[in-house]
Image 1: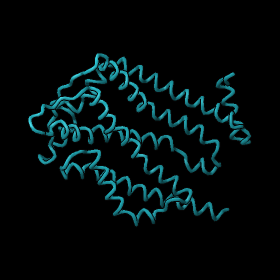
Image 2: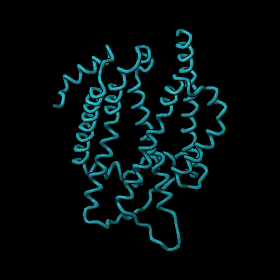
Image 3: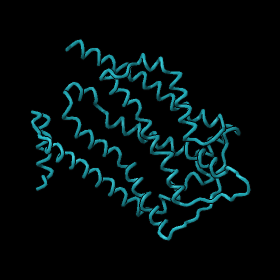
Image 4: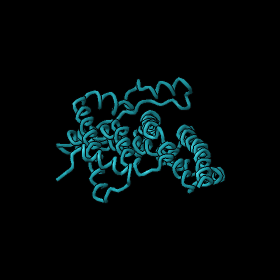
Length: 279
């Protein structure tokens, strides 16, 4: 019989105090964390599904609007980075494509918006397995990870998407007319945003790797040149454009994350060395 939530909470308390949970107990606790996470995604997905006009006209089709804030800001800065909203004609090749894209988009947004709660559930499962000082060192990790993820998604939405979509839609090859499916457009929007949210978690990953002595700030400092080249290549991949200005707009924030990660690594290394001395 499946355990109810009260029993699961008792198991987690037991794990935190005595570490006597069995493997099956761990699986049962994990199952409930996953169930609640899925429920959160579904609830938000239902809400976004019902807000169809807002989700598509304002959010997903936002970069196609000439008044999109990114176009206005960059055009006010310089003509060199001024963009115009691309003109895209959508076609559907399957009878159910519009409904399926609507359904998929709702769950994508459901995942993005519920990420803070999902990560909180993951953290609740991991936290009892850590030592008390490790738990104190990770104070605020849910807030920081959620903030970084949402910052990455917003960066992808407001910066990567407009430049990439404008380039891809305006790319000319003979006399081929530019048309795309609705599914293709949504897939690209997801690709330009969600992976950036994960990339922005780099400082947190570096922090934990430094806490266990796998990575050091010295190593990261020595690898600056290589890191810059890798980041430049990543920027070139996620922004399919030959415009150097656009590449720099994407590369600079990502490299800034790397420099931030060095600072984070230095602080984590101090805790690592201190804990080794105490042991």
